Image 1 (spheres, helix red, strand yellow):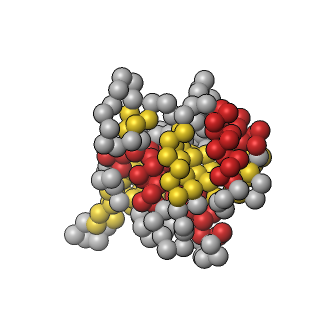
Image 2 (cartoon, helix red, strand yellow; image 1 turned 30 degrees about the vertical axis):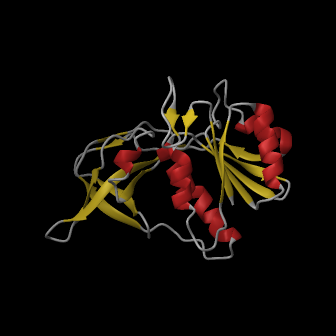
Length: 226
């Protein structure tokens, strides 16, 4: 497995930030998520927003690895070249999915190499890895594909949501003295807020048709690390 980030704005940890730059947290996050005895993992670094360079990277890496993962560049911005590059040097099986966070996910194949183009925001990277990349890796490695344990809990916050996409909000699940499972939001739900996600121990799963949750409504939760 190899992975890389895309974006002219990215700077490795430990270096000084210039104007308009941000730290490349996604590669460090993926290194942790891919830490498993079944996987041999290579970090290919940061690839600039240049379609020719990206296509060369994909073509060369596809000859060496079973699966490639990129972060960023999968949406529709002027410098988002992942989907177009995959069209040119391989095949796109699907692009964009009705979940939040993580809508601009690209999936396809370059020769014999599978490819996941994950979004750029770190929480979206984490969610799409857990829901798509992790089960794919388990299947490719010949192990059992784990199913997320879902529980019902009483929600102690009002949650906002628009209908249309299934949402994986980050929550904190606990148990009352009476044995009742309750969940509260971990904080802000924007997909760049990785610090909030680090406080959570579960996803609050809100179906696509949901338009929000009132206090004391029951919700479905998925514990992390099951």
